[in-house]
Amino acid sequence: MGYLYLAIAIAAEVVATGALKASDGFSKLGPSIVVVVGYGIAFFLFSLALKTLTVGVAYAIWAGMGIVLTAIVGVIVFKEIPDTPAVLGMALIVVGVLVINVFSKTATQ
Image 1 (cartoon, rainbow, N blue to C red):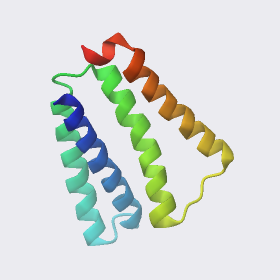
Image 2 (image 1 turned 90 degrees about the horizontal axis):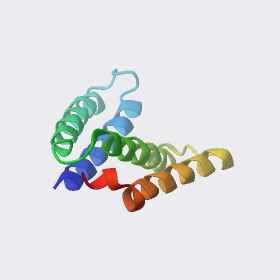
Image 3 (image 1 turned 90 degrees about the vertical axis):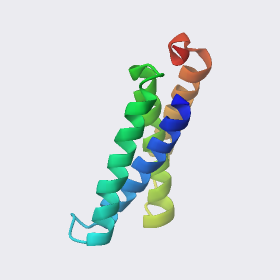
């Protein structure tokens, strides 16, 4: 159940971060509301995930996947095209998250 909470928390955080950009410095009400609600949901679900997942592993997954998924939102929604070093760096982040989940014994504690 911890990984399900974590996945939904990551999705909520990515939506909130996209809305943060769209809020234009909190000057647009609709996106600003999405930011506050999205981050609230994200942190609540992350706290539930931490009941069964180790904090280090959960945070590594949260941060790594958040970076990559937010960059994808940037490409699709905001037409922000990352350069080659950015893509390479994000690929390394994904590999790091996979290594943690496949090989780390702390991932299942």
